[in-house]
Amino acid sequence: MAGSQLLKGTLSTILLKLLADNGRMYGYEIIQNIKKYSSDQINVTEGALYPALHKLESQGYLLTESHKVDGRTRKYYRLSKKGERATVDKLQELQEFLQNISGILAPKTT
Amino acid sequence: MAGSQLLKGTLSTILLKLLADNGRMYGYEIIQNIKKYSSDQINVTEGALYPALHKLESQGYLLTESHKVDGRTRKYYRLSKKGERATVDKLQELQEFLQNISGILAPKTT
DNA sequence: AAATATACCTATAAATAATAGGTATGTCAA
DNA sequence: TTGACATACCTATTATTTATAGGTATATTT
Image (tube, rainbow over all chains, first blue to last red; front, side):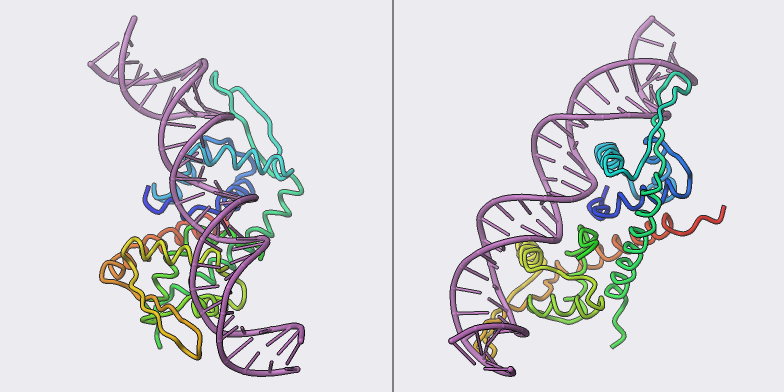
């Protein structure tokens, strides 16, 4: 996809926010969810998603449990207490950054 | 700075936009400008800026001219015709991306 | 004389995502 | 029944991008 490099730096925060909203999700579901919410414009690849989830897990932000559904294994991820706190911080940081970027991108009226 | 990795992918577009607005700028000026516009929150390092400018130049998006001012050399960068076209495309791409991100980050009302 | 600001640059390291590959089950159509 | 496609997990390698840290040099302020 064009402009895919724009995702850099924002993916982990998006993942935390999705889990905060939805309680628990599994990898495949996350990919579909982001695709849908962005009207097919943001395509998170598996090679980006799974390492990102595993890193968040290793940092103690996520807890996991595996369940077999229709013969296939699903690994559910959800926020730990630590992850909930991190989500608040990272969300605020990202929103401030987006505001700053918007300020720079705003058409100049001078 | 915290959250500095958020800049990833957006820097070259920001540079193009700044040059589109200001006609021509030199490296040091760009760093100060971004710092000021973001209220000190976005700090573009030299190690990020100069390679980024040189890449844009090598892609044919920027033209340069050096001038000596107060004993110091300034290298001015400005958009080429090709750079002007690229700016329009990249700006639109970034704005669509920011909208998508905002949509995902918006508080869930469901 | 020393510190700070201005002004350019690059080499190496770190972080992050893409590409491309692997494994496996379920379903639907030819 | 076979082949395509969707679901579901994963990792190794590569590419891209920025940070860190270093270098050079002049002007101004303390």
